[in-house]
Amino acid sequence: MMTPLDPVGDTLSLPMPGLEPDNLLAFLALLGLLHALETARPDWRPRISWKGPPWTAQLHLAAFPEQVEIAQAANEGLAEIIQHFEQHFEVDQRKNVDFTAEDYRSYATRMQKKSVGGALASALTAEWPRKKAGGLFAAPLVMMFGQGHQNFLERLVDVPRGKLPNRLRKLKSPPDMTEPGKIAEALFQPWRHDDDADGFRWDPEDDQRYALRYDDPSLAGAAPTVVGANRLAVIGFLSFSTAPHANRMQAVGATRESDEWFFVWPIWLRPLSRAGIEALLAHPALFEGGRNKLRLLGVDEIFRARRVANGKFMNVTRARPV
Image (tube, rainbow, N blue to C red; front, side, top):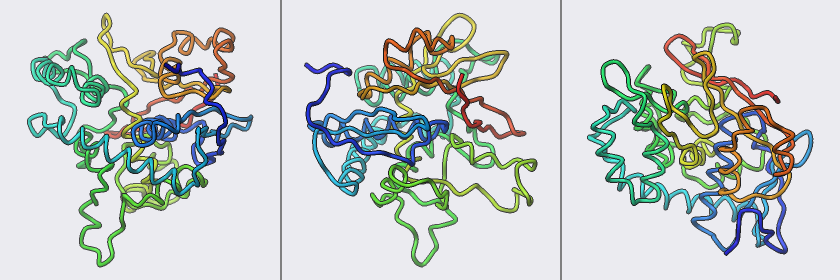
């Protein structure tokens, strides 16, 4: 059996300039890409490393497909994983992560033996701590609670399926959000942010504060996004599990300081599988700024982004090296 560190022999090494190292959405999409390729083309043995600085993600495959074939395979894997979302994600027609402890325990118990369903349940919330009214706190990556009609669980199913927002459904020629070319653009080209589509506020470009805009952001609507990245990021979200701990929730790839959440991820030099990256995300030294401890594991840089509140909306900053 291969381990996350085992080489895969003769490989294709392909740069992915779209996946910026300091962008949380890009990092989620990176993990989603690996999960999708593992599902659709396990014989490709997909791995990712970083080359730089300046850092550029490198995709390693034990095959030699073209970019369009990679995007098509990722699209197929994504569609297969999303089928499990639809089969196991009937939580009382819930649109947001607003579980009571009893509701969540019932849901998590049903998902316990299901690979995708169990990962999803673990990524949404944890059974402890609890709010004063008895409800559970959402995971730090959950940045929507119905404000501005932005419903997290609804989008978690609709975005990867390519369901069009209401504003686009009446167009004479509505866009195809599931077109593999959208994934290719997200991976192999610098992001243009020209898709009128729903996102999850994981991209720093989603921040629409007045201080960051020349004009009134309320008149422009939601910020244009990168639909291929958002679709992959939904699958990447499954890698960020939560767990109850003392008086606060613990979450993979996140740390809480002075009532603020920070997202932390590594930049590594050796090709790693998804399992290897997930192990790094859970390593204690990652949150202690322990670059020297992690160098033995091939980590050369650690990035950290802050979750910020903009009125009733949440956003995330560009990450900085620590």
